[in-house]
Amino acid sequence: MTLLDFARGPGLQAAWLILIAGTAWRIIGVLLLRQRLHLAEPRTGIAGQARGAVTTVFTRFIPRRTFWPRIRVSVILSVVFHLGLVIIVLGGAPHIQVIQQFTGLTWPGLPKGVIVLVSGLTLASMIVMLLRRMFHPVMRLLSTADDYISWVTVFLPLLSGILLSGETIASYRTLLALHVLSVELLMIWFPFGKLMHAKLAFYSRAAMGINFSRKGAAT
Amino acid sequence: MTDVTKAMHGFVADFGPTAALAMESCVHCGRCAEACQFYVQTSDPRYTPIHKIAPFRQAYERQVGPFAFVYRLLGLAPKVTVEELTNWQELIYDSCNMCGRCSLICPMGIDIADLVEKARHGMFEAGLVPADFLGALDEKEHATGSPFGLTTPGLEGLLHDIGKQFGVVMHVDERSADIVPTVSSIDLKTYPGSMAAIAKILNHMGTSWTFRTDGFDADNVSLTAGDRAGQRKTTLGIVNAAKACGAKTLLMPECGHSFTEIRWEAANVFGEPLPFRVLHITELLAEGIADGRIRVNKAPQSATYHDACQLSRRGGATAAPRVILQALGVELHELEDSGDTNWCCGGGGGVALIKRAQPLRDQAFQIKQRQIEATGTATVYTSCSGCRQTLDHGGKAVGWTKTVSSLLELVADNLKD
Image (tube, rainbow over all chains, first blue to last red; front, side, top):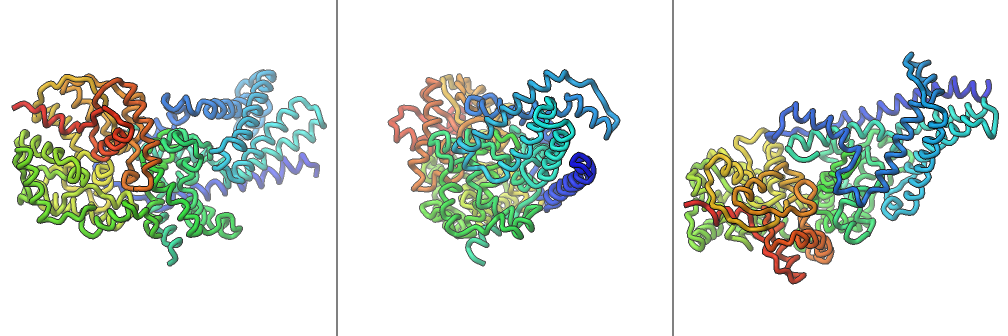
């Protein structure tokens, strides 16, 4: 069995298993906690609270104007990074092929030059984010091993993907195997660290939307 | 149980999915620091809001979280020590107003202010409430129902004295009434005119109303101290007194945290929906002006308005004071950050009651000072006696010529005959 065979076979199966089971365990573990009752008369009914939940999921992507001057760098880096990842994953032709294999869905990919440019920007944003985490007093204080492990598990697929697209330092098969393995590493770490915010953010934003809509307060 | 075990138990006791989601979702981005007046004014990273609950997050990971068994097995979340908790006292009490500005900036939608409130439950259980004065006031409130130990006979006399002093008829301990107003102990001590103003307005409305000396002081210092039993006792005292006289409306005074407690938490404490409405006085004024029960003269002037966090951002009553100011013909110059994004006065969340926190509080106050001065107005209105007192003290410290006034009293002074 070659490295690529392992990556595409048992490696991928194990990664999926850990990803799905770990994610389900974490989300169910939280949602099964005893829910507090809210008996106060709400200002907004169920429909309004549901609207608040959906709205808050989207409005929290971009902070309120008044906060911008103090968090501009953080927001720009975050937008470049997240948007970059979305473009690479959903716009890169090889990724679309993989998605098609699993789901049957397909769409036109972006030109390779665009993906390379976006990959470069995303990589750069990650490096700046790492430096900020290491040297910004607040972020340094808050940071745990999870922050650095999560950074590595996202950085490696990005880096190996860029190397793969250029086929520069090794053969295509070797680079592909490394790329797939790095993605599997990300999948394995996903349920245990802060990468889970990709799912949890929707839940926690919605919870805030419901709680504050009920009070008729800003969400 | 050791103090630390009690603290952790107190923290996780009422943990539900929402609080757990908050614990699970943080990405350590640090943006909450930029919304916190204590960090903004000092640049001390320890004042980063989410950092203030760090030991309690550790407790959550160890005891409640979905992977708690892994954390315990691998020793990833060691037990919190008494020393750690003691070191965190300043962060949980002195440097958090529970104003919720951090909750508004958080990209994950984490209500950090709510987590701090839970952390205070833990600190109380561990006996780590700052004694001077918050802890002492809480003890007094827990024992007597009033942070200043005012007893029923004393209150009755005091209210009638205030009535005489301000020339208004006071209704006290009547058997039944449609509206039962409560007061803040700050009003009792410092702003008695505020209580006279409530009486004057309710008399003007021609409604039946009464103060109840058995459920009177809405201050609820226990809430800010983290004393759940005291909080419950104070809340139930007020609710039961209003219920006993068949109130249709329980009226909260110009106070922020007491409004939050009674409006949003009292029913949960009571165990069922309350048999009456709960309104902040500002809401009653806005409602009364809108439906004609309160008729006011114009009081033209330029002024600014300071929002009480618990009334606006955390309470959903941001519009009410603006309706009142407009009806009075006040030319309102909004602060740079007003309404839902306002900055706390610096004293909220019991910080005003912690003696040693004064230098930090004064630093926090500077934001409000700058923004008020930028409006160029001479008068600041507010709808919270706690804010009013903090602004008064802060202004005094910097030699201010600004007048800090009560919106309630402004209405009472301008009622049509």
